[in-house]
Image (cartoon, rainbow, N blue to C red; front, side):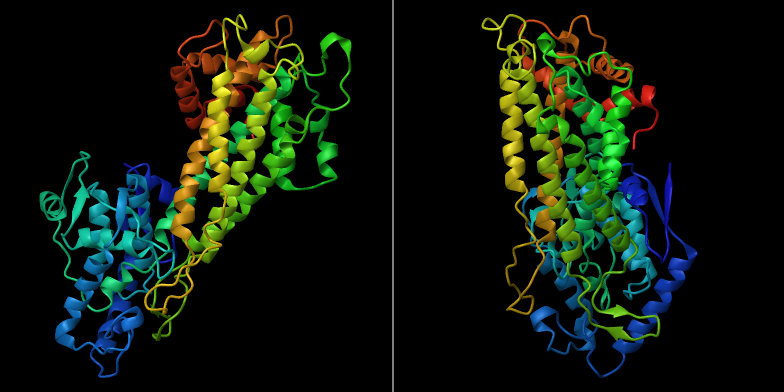
Length: 512
């Protein structure tokens, strides 16, 4: 099994994906253990002093003015975890919780939090045992960290609350720890606070969304090329020299991908009844501009994620010179903004894909295709309602594109009076990414059928490869009406697995 070693300098996106989705094992580097021990010595020295230090010998948030005596400090750390584990609503996905725990461990191992090495080892042990704390949908405002979600994870480390075992059954955390020989941790000064105070949930969801969107943007280039081909459009608008005079990198990449898929097509440039078309509709002609803008948004979001993956987010933090300082690095604004940006870009990509699908189905605009791509229009409805489903998904994505990060709601007796709502931005982005896959699946379904209905004209080799792979994956082709939901489900699974991209690349080579 793949192993990810966590050191003091952060982790990579591929590390997060390996642990969250691939079940990779986690180990602490020797450097991390040394840094953990050194930072702990600083905390214990401060704890022995009579002067109050925030997070070590005081209350938290709006209660930070109270000096906590030594005999109450262990109770204080337990209490912050118990009281902050106040999430409600449905459980979040296993991969999100694993990313959340792994990223918190990343910050702990930086040596900036003051957590003991044994606590970090227990975090790794829980991940390696496949134990997943029960974390709920609601409870984070994206500021002072993803507090409730992280608290539910810390509760499991203490052997309290519920968690899901490797077999998928939810049971008391204490029982699961015991079965795997893991001793519950007894938290000491600052440790409870350090386990809760990070942007780890929203960051984990950002990393996974970036991975999914990378595939979906390539898929959108493939489906757009198929739609252009099925509509007998022109590929002249994809010429590199046209995109060089507006040098947005994403736009150039999207155009290059579409051009590669269309190479050798016998459909592009043909016109119904010999009537030349000067220009295709915007949804066809401007596909690289829209997909390209989204790709550039992805690039910016990836830069933010990389910076965050290299960060140590906690409050207070232990600086290299031994000072312990309060700070505002837990504020989720940098992550929240890009999560919202991505939801906007995804909604627009879905919107243009839906417009191409509608054009394929409309006999007045499809340049000779049968109405709704039906076998016997009137007797058969063809893909009429598939487009309804696609339109409903796009409409929801437009609502999800309303930014969460533009909102703020004060909390903690006005001490935490401006929050990022980054967790909410991440949660709605996950829904948006799921819907984008479905929208592209409907376009793929329509475009592959339409290409096959162009009798006497030969599609591009890459297009033929995509059609063949789709049919092999259970995505049905032209014919009389049938139960459509299974075909759409097969198209959705094909898209999520990266099938259109993989098939196209057998002919084109790697797409950009």
